[in-house]
Length: 62
Image 1 (cartoon, rainbow, N blue to C red):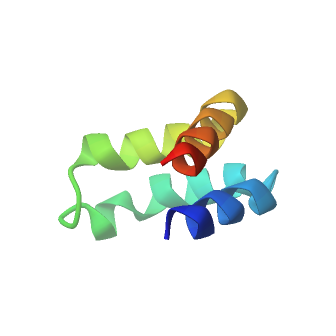
Image 2 (image 1 turned 30 degrees about the vertical axis):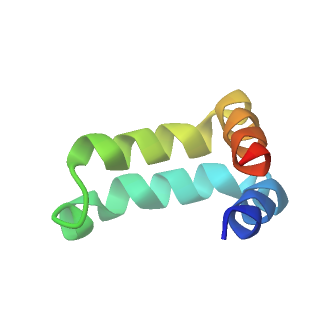
Image 3 (image 1 turned 30 degrees about the horizontal axis):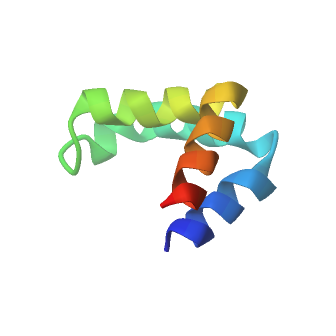
């Protein structure tokens, strides 16, 4: 599963920014499944290229 997520993040490239905006927009509807802070953290991870690369590297090390 980790390799799948890492590959998906890597392949999505510039679309990650759009995905982050989707996360921000969907928070009112999905807010109960995770706390607001977790949704914000996910959106920030998707927006920041360095954070995304670091997370991909972390997933591949596991």
